[in-house]
Structures are given as C-alpha cells and as structure tokens.
Image (cartoon, rainbow, N blue to C red; front, side):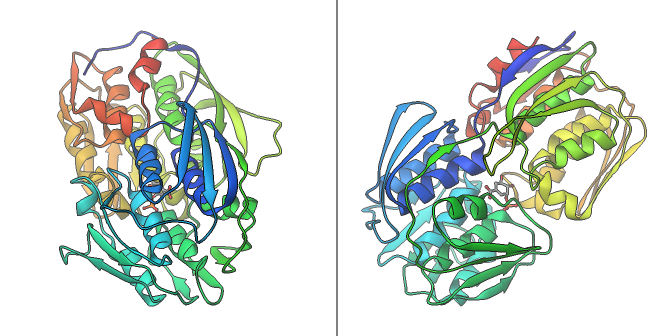
Length: 425
Ligand code: S3P
C-alpha cells in the first residue's frame, strides 16, 4: 500500500466498534444464561477469533450482519471441551482472557495463535492462574503459547500485578468466577476497566477501589443487550491525521471515551491540539462522544506514569504526531510496548528514522525531536496493525512515496481503514 502527501482531510466518519468491548461481549455473553444481543460489534480478525473459540466450545453465535451478534449463552458451566486446539490468531486479549476462563472448566484445552502470539509473554497469566490452582503449561517451555490448560476447581486469591495490564487483570477476575472465595487484583496503575463494568452489567458482583478490583465467585450471569461504542484507539489515527494535515477538519462520531482509555485526548490537549469533545447524552456505563479535530499547531510533551495505560495502544501514532510538534516529546514508563504485536519501540524508531525523523529509543520509551520534515520510505509493518495505520498517517504528511509492507494487517482491528481514510481526502 502506497501513500503520498494529502492536501486536506475533511468530512465525518464513524470508526468501527471497540475491540476490547467486542471481545468481552462475546465472552461474557457465552458465560451468561440466555440471549446476549450485541450491536456495533467490531468485525476485525481478533474479535472473530474470539467468536470462533466459543463456537468450538458449543456456543451458538449468530451474525445477522457484520456488526450484530446474537449469542446464545449457556451459563457459567455451559462450555463443552473443544475437539481441537483453540486458535486465538493474533489476539492477546483472546489468549489471556480465555486462559482465565479455561482454567475454571472441567475439560482440557490447548490454546495457540499466530507467530506473533507465540512470542508474547504468558508467564504473567500462568503465574497467577497457577496460584489459583489452575494447571496451565507453556508447551514449548518458554512461557509462551501454545498453552495446555486443564480446568480445575480454583481458589480465590489476592494478586498484585507487576504491570498495569487489563488482559492480566481480566484473566484473573474471570478465573475468579470459578473460585471458592473472592478474588482481587491490585495493579500498579489503573488499566482499562471494561471487564469490571461489563461483568457487573451481566450480574456479577465486582467492586473497585483505587487500582484494586474484586470479584465474588459463582454469580448468575444473565444475557444482556450491548451497544459497542466506536474504538478510541481507531479514532486516534483520524485525530492525529486531522491535527497534522493542513486545512483539515474531521468529525469522528460515537467514540467511546471511557476515562481509562482517554489518554490520547488528554495528550492532544497538552500538545495544544484543536480537538472538541461533544459528549453524547447516554446512560451507558461506557461514555460516548463525537470528536471534532482541526489542523493544529502542536508542541512536544512528556508522557509517563499512570497516563501510559490509558493510551498504550495509541503510542505509535503519538510518536508520529510528535514528529510534527514543536520541541521534544519524551515517552517513558512504556516498556510494555516491547511485548505488543511487535516491539513497538524498535519498530517505530526504525521506521520513523527511515522517514527522516529525529527519534531515539530508550529502555522504556522513546524521545522525539519534532520539526524535522518526513520523507517517504519503505515501511515494514511487522504485520502489526497499529504500526501500519500509524505510517499511513505519516505517509499522508511526508514528501514522496511511503510504501507499507504487510498493510492488510489493519484487518485485525480496523477492516475498512484505508477506505475510510481515502473518504476523507
Ligand atoms: C487490551 C489490553 C491492552 C491493550 C490491548 C487490549 C484488552 O493490553 O494493549 O490492545 O482488551 O484488555 P495489556 O493488557 O497487555 O496492556
């Protein structure tokens, strides 16, 4: 896929449904009694992997159209052992959350994924789930998938995680559904809280206090109607493009702005971006807004600490933004970037350097000197969707031609991304 400089971006769009919420809707719908109806589901490859895993465990999931699901849940103990290995594809959320659920079943499963998933660290869930009494083993013995999980009766624990990770927190809370006493998780900083919010709406007793979430075991979960808001992580590419492309004005409709996910909005404000938030009048526990962005004069800033989990997936496109800001942007406390779908520190630094950016990798982030114009280059996406989308935005604001290898990987979280982007030019 090739990109050249855009003159202006105009118009309005609705980005696809939130990936984290879509995964959870399928999982919790499967574990609830009765029908769960989902609208605004993200038809990306990751969420389709989650559907496939649950279908293999006996759950009927109808898709009357791409974004609407009817999940016929069978209750907390209704899953049946799959006849084959479960495949999470590229999806860390599927792998880790499902591991928590599988730990409490009465059958054995093997869970694997693509080449990227088989390199990502799973000891962060193996350790706490084993402490709960689960039998969970990394088959290659390197702490990575494939994982062999023999369901057991589990014990409630209190666990303090080393990293702020919603996937780890959620895996433990989901195993906690099958515990013999309450389970709680304390994180070093608050990660996205979709699991806590949605499990409550299905009827679980989940309490949160600061960075601790606790769950009571064996709730009666009941099917729900779920409306999935647009994914702020997908909106981020259009927010960034609107800021740095001359003469631009974009309205992005119906975006989820949960405070555990809105770090990108906080950073854009700090950088001086012209972004207006129009909150929707909804009673949903997941707040929604329309976002209006106009071409902006940006300044560099420091991103660190508790802010990082609220924008972890947006850091690649923030690095692109920082190239167009006046002054220096420092990103720290973000070592987690190294264990995402690719090593997002190295991949951003290599690719942005190839385009002429002044960017340095650090142990836990990167430093970007803004104001050096970008030129086109050959970009390796490493089949990481967020890298491909970030460089599409960079390419629209660079001299010459930017060619992205593996560009189709955007289907993981945003099928139709290139079409939506073209629609704004
Ligand atoms: C996610 C949590 C985050 C995020 C990922 C989705 C989730 O990962 O990067 O894209 O849905 O829980 P970590 O929990 O590893 O930080």
